Every structure is written in C-alpha cells, then in structure tokens.
Length: 307
Image (tube, rainbow, N blue to C red; front, side, top):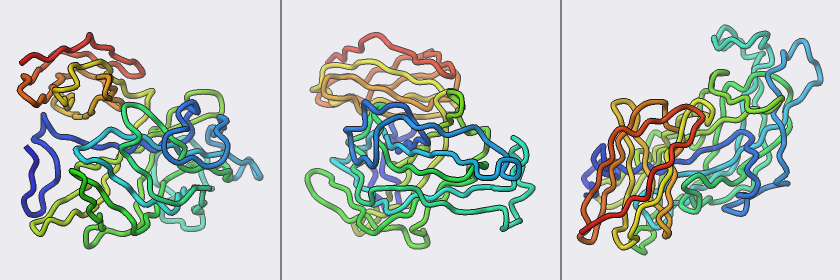
C-alpha cells in the first residue's frame, strides 16, 4: 500500500519497500548497453589508472567515466535533471590509506569537471542491471575523494499518466556530494577502477499533504567485486510482481521486465529472503535462505505465482 501522508517517503513497508536505484559507475566496460538513456562521447572502454602519487608522477593522468543505472519505483517515469558532474581530487596523496590527514589542507584538493551531456535522465529506462554512460574525462593522477552531481531544476515524475514537478526539498542544495574512500573502488583490471553510486529514489522522493512531490537525494557507493547479485524470472506478468530481497542489514528491490526477468545488484554478502508482492488476485510468495557471495551472481529457479 502506497503511503501518501504529509512528509512520508513514497514506498512500501520494509519488506515490500521499493527503492529506485541510480548506480553511477566510474568506468564500466559495458558498452553494449550504452544505447539506453543518454550517452556522451565514445562507447569504447577507457581505463582509470590505479592511484598514483601526485607528487611522484607529475603530468600523470587518469581517465574517468561515469555510467548510470537503477532499479525501478512505482512511477511511470522519474526524470532527474543533471547538469554537471565533478570529482574532487587529492593531489597530495602519498599512500593508499583512507585517512583524512590532508582534508583540512585546501591546497591539496582540486575539483575537475567531467564531460557530460546535460539534461533529464529517465531513470526507469535503466533497470535490472542496464547501464548508460553519464560522464567522462581525463584528470590528473591522484585519489578521488568525492563525486559531485550538479542538479538542474527540471526534475519531474509521472504517475498514473499524470506529470508532477519534482522540486528540491527546502534546505537541499542543487549540488549533491558523495564522499568516497579508496576502499570503495573496484580495481577490476590493471589500471582500471570503478564504483557504483546507489541513488535511492524511494527514500529520495517525498510526497506532502498538498499532493506535491519533493526531491531529497540519498546516495551510497558500492562495488560489484565486494557485493553480489540475485537474478531470476517471475511469471505471469498479469501478477504485476514487485520484488524485494532483505536480511537484517540490507534491503534491495526490483520490478521485473515484461518477460519476467529481474536482477538486483549491490547486495552485501550474506543470506537473504526474497518477497514477491503480487497483485490481481495472485498470492504473495517468499523464498528464504538465498545465499549471496561477493562478486557472484545467484540465479534462482523460475518463480510461478498462483491465485
């Protein structure tokens, strides 16, 4: 049951809650999926070198690419206006530690703007593991401490065929910063690193008493190497199923494609339960004891819902 009370996050109860995730990838060799959403520049894979000391490698550079993907929420579409992407570079880094020893030394930090096609990104076009290129650029070598998304003012969502403006909640800035640790990165190949940013749209969209929707962005970083995924198929489509997987410390969500396929990424290693919230007279279904391992895909047997 959707909640629509004053100041309430739009979603279900915990086991049924829908999160729409926006996973922003710093370099992802998934160019076969670049046809979804906006793209900018070439779709050829580009590398992000491992951290190099700014003092010991003058003139060294690293190429950064950001890709976009999400899991859906109960809206027809959600369009987020992204005007710029910047990264904060620590040029004083001399080691691979994650401390903040230099955080008060402004001379160590430089913001670099990446190349991006500014505009509105329909998050619901990107789900179940599909990615699209968001931004890219070549920057000096060093540790990336933060990613900043610069938002525009043209956000909106569509629900039940009706378009609603999506304004920032009072007190929220148009610049959204995500702090990163070096351990957040996935060094998936020589000289190449990547990271995902999970944009939790269910927690980021608030509906107030006057019927207006507001945006208060909530994001978290994760990597494929340190997390696992669950994929499967649920039928029939007439049941309009909503998938949630959960345990005591993690919860994630998906809405299958029309053919029933779904995939949920970014799960911490552990044992999960999967809940299928069905409609149109079909019974809800729960599957327990699903084991997720870091860097692995857990494939489930076909789920057939019954009335």
